Amino acid sequence: MSIRTPGAAEVRAAAAAIVDAFAANDGERYFAAFARDAAFVFHPEPARLDDRASYERLWESWRESGWAVVACDSEDVLVQAFPGGAVFSHTVATRIRTADGEEAYRERESIVFRIDDDRLVAVHEHLSAISSAE
Image (cartoon, rainbow, N blue to C red; front, side, top):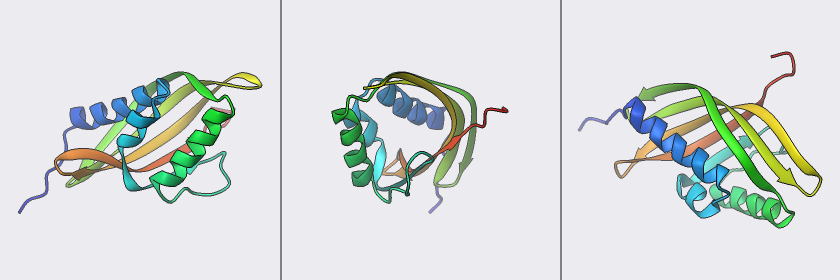
């Protein structure tokens, strides 16, 4: 049995669905794109989140505090497909609203996908800060 390698367009579409759901503050649609065992590394957080449920709880605490995404744009995309999955990396510009007002920032993000029942599902997301010198 051969393992399918996803095409670049399929990977871009799966990542775009994640970015679109995030930008729309649609937690249900956003988290549906991630496997239950997905892990998350976010530079502002003190520890890695080892499963989707941990991130869902964090997301809910953000939302309860008044946090919301205002805009989220993806650029500088790189797709690296391999048998059974792919790595999607890009630069993401995000604007959020908090109780303290609006903030904007740019980060590098990598999302690792695996093929699960013939659909791409995200199994890891990693955000890195971009230094002010860049």
